[in-house]
Image 1 (cartoon, rainbow, N blue to C red):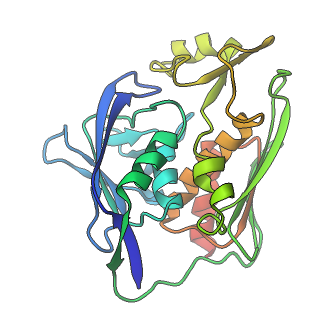
Image 2 (cartoon, rainbow, N blue to C red; image 1 turned 180 degrees about the horizontal axis):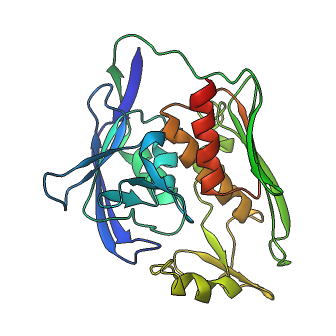
Length: 282
């Protein structure tokens, strides 16, 4: 079986969305079969945190891996980029508790991956793909995320906000055609979509110890009268960003199941709940 890793190293640094802490990330080629994993190089003995569902320990407005003492937060944009672009193994060294938000999207990560390129690795026997044979779902109130049997891996998402500039949005993206159709790929259609927030929620979130590193330079902010920092990269940029988050969370399964993922007004918490259910039933 052949997998892929990076052909060179990638280095970026910046502020974390929630912690407000500046960190440096160095992504190196991984050993064959090592999967994707983080290394906290700022801590004694440089502890390793696998990018797996089993290591998720918090899902409040981002996905965090590790333990209460040794963790890395807001991993979803970087992991979405690596997994969607076919990087099966990577050593991700980080000198702090949170992956930099950069411009709020995954575009800088995908540009860097494309720039260094990939190399093939031989990893022995091929493991069986994860195939969804029966619908699997989780819900909370009117929010839900599901995985349906399908001939290809597809992500569809719906959001509904009471601010006119966002409103109700739906978008669907096929990961299976990612490499074949460069005009409709993760790099062009999903990665550029930036994180977003509502103006009336910012003060509450900051008082709750969140979004300490958020700014108009790395997040879209929407108020009752519209966007505070236009222009948008897509008319439906918010829902595309939700797909970015979902791709990153589902990537923690190690490989993308053959399924149609359908979500509505969901969250990192529901994404991870679904992934755990998939591991349980598949």
